[in-house]
Length: 155
Length: 155
DNA sequence: AAACAATCATTGACTTTTTCAATGATCCGT
DNA sequence: ACGGATCATTGAAAAAGTCAATGATTGTTT
Figure 1 (tube, each protein chain N blue to C red):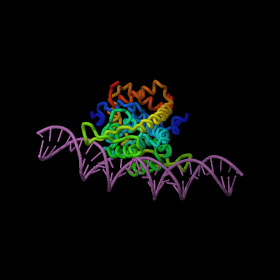
Figure 2: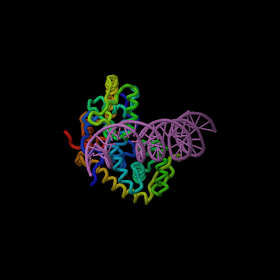
Figure 3: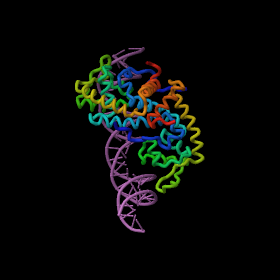
Figure 4: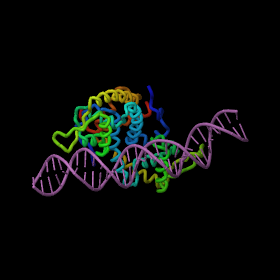
């Protein structure tokens, strides 16, 4: 299994006080992870974001584009571009909103679901790779803390 | 104390399997944090990145621009721009590398250190705000896990 | 029911950020 | 001393982000 290309050992500057800044830690881990994820998804012609859209389209939650924008922290116009691409490739479709006819609901096609299954496996492997420095329990705890920081207690 | 402007409660889509993707969680928390941090730094004419550079310049570690680029996951040319700005404002200076005369060491000026002290206080408050959903122990644990995922065990 | 403001997806313009190749200076190994 | 590598810098090109305007539709107010 390949390992992170960058920062395989603690760099000198991590000693600085900024090495504990949550913002920087998030930025670095996110940057490193994006490289891994996009590499893993390249075989499928996907990137982190289009994969996220495809995943949600496959979720059965019938998200509107507005919901996708909010959830993925994107501008609505960026969602248009992402959905355009996936729709052109026959992986998702725009359906009319049920209560609100202004909204478009994004749903996966059968082909989209097949693609998603394969891409998901690659993503899981990439995530395992990225968190290879943590034990399974620690990985779970990290995800729990991230979720809690974002959305509160839950459970 | 102000609270996160976005996602004050769990959104509908968080239920999807993707709501556990480390990549997405990192992206979202990082995005939300950046907004907060940049808002906190705006009073000082700084942004997340220039603050990071200023912090490292104040650290006493005498980083070279190459080290800054590596540590901050930036292209060397982006570091040039950041240092240009801080230097123009008299907050940091470029010094000649000690062993390597190609390299430029970035050091803070007295004024830079004053600025950094004030900005640091604002950043600490922003971080507290961002992690207000976590207990102190959880915040510490989150930071530890992020560091470990990035740089391995260490202490 | 007519009018009004608000929201959704979309487009297009604009700015910012990222990426990358080329360059001169300097370093290191031979 | 030579040749290949690394550093900071520049500039160009590509990608991503931001934002206002628009038509369709909704909910609300009168």
